[in-house]
Image (tube, rainbow over all chains, first blue to last red; front, top):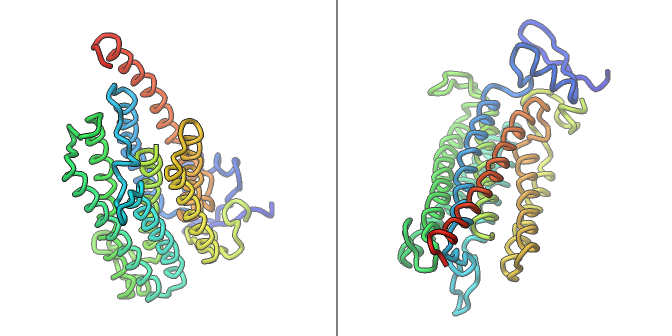
Length: 241
Length: 116
């Protein structure tokens, strides 16, 4: 077949088949199932899958309390509106936060690209820009929390309706904000490694003592894009619904 | 090469994902457009079935672009794609279960606990 690719293993050369036949042979080969993904990338994907379940549980809990309460649900369009020159603009801050996070995803994707081209300065700069966007996002979230807390929103009470609104809001956005914060810290650390040239000289990792590779930037990117992905769902299901 | 590396620039055939910057910029642009669209759904105050179907549509397209292109899942082998995308089907089942459960709770509150 012309559409086959060979993968050099340490001992043998394995033919990778395309499509469903490849799916079946990959899983039934009695050896690593993810033939073209490194252990690091596969493990990040599996971690993200588990994180998907955690966020899903939060969102499903929110759906359940919202559709089972007999009190009216607060109108998010008004709750999250901002006063600009005396005019109330609905969801303005949330829209800006969405654009900030999407922009950070774009710069991250480009950082991965420049990493593989061994362009250390551009890759590290783009990662620091990504981290700056992330920090901006967390800052705006802190502002939003402060505003709502001053308006009397608590996990057990709020002035506008169903008390479950507060607990859903703090739990979901809080857990997401924590993810963004952790991402910012890791991004700064990874940018430092890129800038220092760790991945060019294959400097061993502090914890893993494995050779440093530019793939680490891509794996970092997977996490960061996932954080953006979760926000897409929070934005649609919590803020807009 | 069709399954593993549809893009001609990725010839290494392994875990090395490299695509033209132009592709990322295009996806970035569409994410902005789609986010603006979902914001406008709220801005113009659409309601009912139009509102939630549009919100879901924009949300799913955005998620697809992020997972497929930014996270490179579209270029991975099917073994990984299905390992990641199949388990969340259980989440959809859970959504179905809890929808019934919450309607039951709601009905109980109205019928037996004097709500409303």
